[in-house]
Amino acid sequence: MKLTFEYTWPYERMMNDLYVSECPFCKASNVLTSFKEEQLALAKEGVKQRLIMPCCHGKMTILNADDDYFYTDEKLRARP
Image (cartoon, rainbow, N blue to C red; front, top):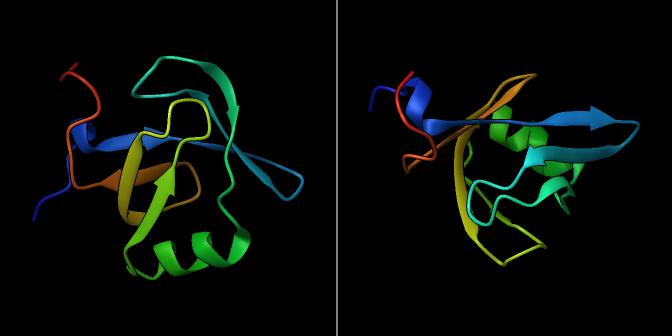
């Protein structure tokens, strides 16, 4: 599966916490996730992880991650 921009979502790390600037499902801003460092490390290795957004309980399946983006199995944004 080719991972393209539509299947990505940016995140930010502050101290040991991971935030998304906007929820892809309900559009809430500055959402503190419950995603742990261990989960991020596994995602960076290509181990599928599930992130449940605390604001609306939307579910994101993360196939991979880098230092800036989650790569998911569903389109989260429109093509630029």
